[in-house]
Image (cartoon, rainbow, N blue to C red; front, side):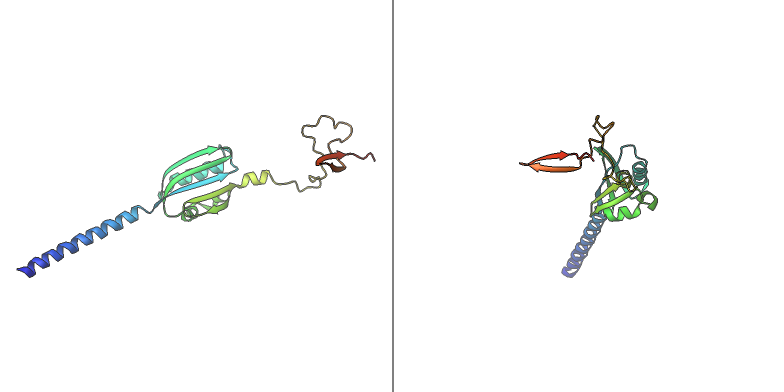
Length: 167
């Protein structure tokens, strides 16, 4: 009788341990959802590439709770995803990825920069480079003689003086 009681006790403990292990496995699989933050700098609020990226995230079945915000040229998207930020970026189609430059990726963060901004801020590469152009922004006196382009600069007691030579 004692053996039967011990056997029943052992069986119930094994069943309890198995159910506890199964419950722990279920909790770890559901807790793999990570809060991912995506930051895109140099972007306009109504940018078509940003809208396409956001819609792609909303359509992805592994992405949940997509929330976006925008402030001073930087868009932020927060979402939950069943994996790391790198895996999420891998799921984005190449056509959408092409509009952005990846600046940093870690477990929960993707930092991007808009390639459209980089193209609009690129320096001039034609014959009229920046050094040969006369900067007339804010200058109203350059009608007959280019007073905005200085031939030499000198400093005296920490003050910089700009000068013109009349050739």
